[in-house]
Image (cartoon, rainbow, N blue to C red; front, side):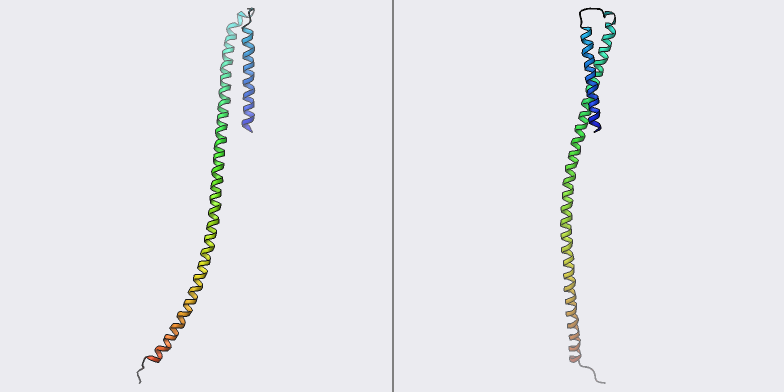
Length: 140
């Protein structure tokens, strides 16, 4: 918004300077030399206006270049952000899926361990009974 306003102001100023140069050049190009006494000053003013015109033209070009560069950087950053956002969204999706799978694996492993522990406890209990029956006790 600021660029548009500034560019319009600069272009309007450039137009005014060009118009002034045209009027002065036409005035001093006339054949009647009623203005000969001021011709030196007129040449100085025309020279000054040409410098101003050059500065305005350069300013408009620099402003336009800077704006185009900023727009280009903005668009590039926007694309990079969109790619990064999509990548991160996909990462979240995969990590969530992986986390759910790991939670399921932990639950299954915990359940398997509990079953194996119960089975081992039963085997140890049975072993204890068998040992009591098989190992001879010294009679006292």
